[in-house]
Length: 290
Ligand SMILES: [Zn+2]
Image (cartoon, rainbow, N blue to C red; front, side):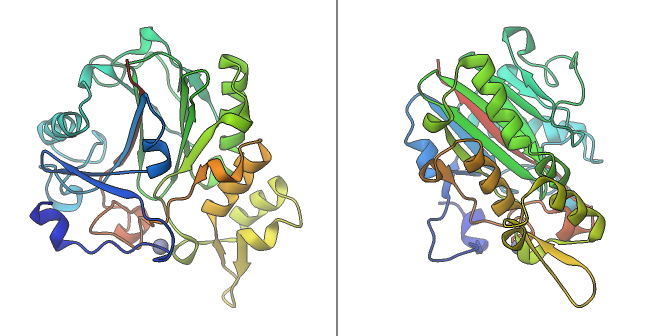
């Protein structure tokens, strides 16, 4: 345990529920889900602000080249993160997130895309693969990361699901893609909903709620949001994604919940809401070990 960790008090959403595992290696702090750690032959993580070299609003572990940070600092952050997670930078495959439900079947040809060479694709919010060694990486600062592991077919998926993605049922699109591409049986799939904004922190307006009324049943609506006297709503993206995953056939017992809000922990995690948009990016990573 290093001084980084000691100086920050993590606020778990439900102190009685299981927390994510806090890993510290080579000076870098990253989070994992105990249920996914237990699946042999895969590695995953969710980064925190701790362990990098960026300064100011990007301090310290910013993984985005497009948020005004110094490029050299971001490269150094990637090197430190990869060393801590024992992965190779050349094996990363990056998303190009634009709030779509486009899921790319990632192959050997995509190795290094967005890192060692330009991406030949755009508008990719989700990726699936069964190629060992490729490391899928997606980016966050309040939006919802969705992790999928199919131990039976040794296949994985990683998707970005903000409010638009959630209203468009990104989780379901990803599960269906894995069924089609790899023969995944949702009943044997493991999923995790990553650190992201909690309902208490997530005020939205009527136009956002309209989209959720369209994509969820009337019975499900009360679990997703409530209306406040000011005419705004508090929206629960965690529960919305949990419902989508169970409806897609993933057993409830196979779904890990985040129990950790980006906006409630602005010193530990980047939050778009908490920072007023002045922030770096966190990352979710997932790989099949060789
Ligand atoms: Zn919160």
